[in-house]
Length: 483
Image 1 (tube, rainbow, N blue to C red):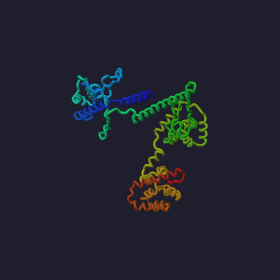
Image 2: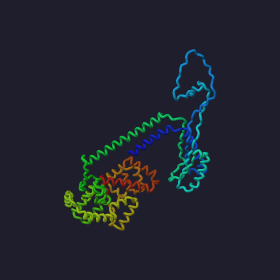
Image 3: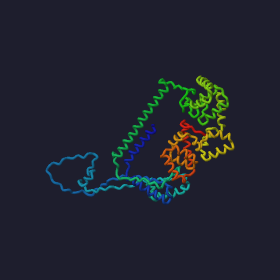
Image 4: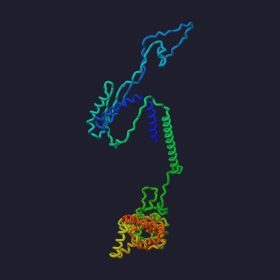
């Protein structure tokens, strides 16, 4: 916070100081820099060298030269002359005001001396990583010295520096921003400067308020954690047997429980929705005692624990729930040994209904029918095991008219028409009988106009859409798919 305040103050001081810069000096430096840069780009290659020129100049001043005494005509007056006293620091013969030049007793000429260059300092930079530029740096120095007419007796100097720079992307198409220098001093209290000052003050005020609020918040947290009396806060361990909502469980898909210590181990965190079926199968296969299964349930998220519990009989469930109610200190070695054994077995599982469904859903409907036909002939037992998990478009013929009407009422009629392009007449009649009058007209018109131009990919995509809609209604219990 202190560093930010210092940077803001430095920026403010530099911005105020720039208002008093000599415009003649700035224009002269810009002129000489552009002239040297253009020469370097032309003779040494564009963007190989960068030059910066700084000059020290004299301030302009008025020079008064007295010529001869004038003879003004004076009227004689009998009145006494008033005595005038000249104060220290006021010229007796020359008034400072230019308007009074012709009112003095001496003739004079006043000229404005031009600004002269007292010293020139030039810096030439190049990229140190480009070794070929090191040889050209001497030529670049001589070129800049000749252009600026460097005079060493005056104190002029040209410095060549090698910098470690990374190559930056350069976009030559980007239009550069030009800075226009207006002669004369800029008004300090211009509208823009006042607006910038107000914004800066608001920013400083915001930083101050933010720092005060942060300090108060930190102080309050310190008091809360210390109990108000300076005592250290108490770490509370969360009992993994406490049932949390879904997403707050001790492991698996529900997420890990928040412990007071970051080093506390969470058992069975490898169990999630993707492998819960395999985990249940493994528990059944190992024939673990009810007490050990209950101990495992205490580390799973509630939704996963319920899935495991549902796979056991009611008497076993009653024993598990009673055991789950009792808080016990498990044997760490035995617990870790069992977890390691189950985790190693889970990692070696292959296949399964979930993986099968994920793969078979990505196979086209045409290939699904071919696979089923082949299995029915070559492996009736495999066909019988696989068939309940596969839905093809022809399965929709087994639906009742009310169920098919429910699917068609929620479906996109254009996709329905696309799905019916190449089906058998019996399938078409089944759909046509359950369409509304307007739906029949739309499907019939689509088949007449676009039926021949519809690709097989579009047909399969439309049929997959109808199948997914039917499976969704089947999962919700609104229809019953018969496979």
